Length: 58
Image (cartoon, rainbow, N blue to C red; front, side):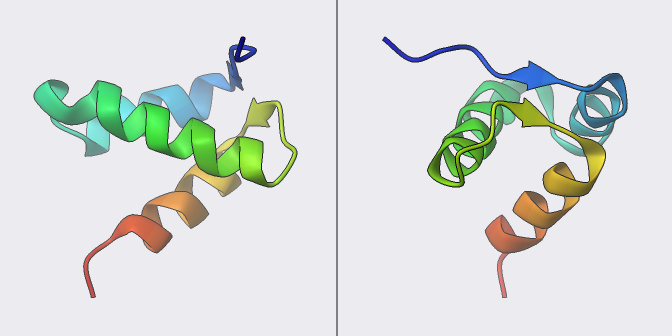
């Protein structure tokens, strides 16, 4: 069982602002998976921006 991630309010707000609702769930899951790979249980704004940058098309 995967433990739910804690999202800081600022990171949640940025996710809602940056990502369209119809793909937001998939993006959120991917960011949570990236955090879990790094052993994190909390997603802050800094990690959100870093993960978003890693996922952005080059």
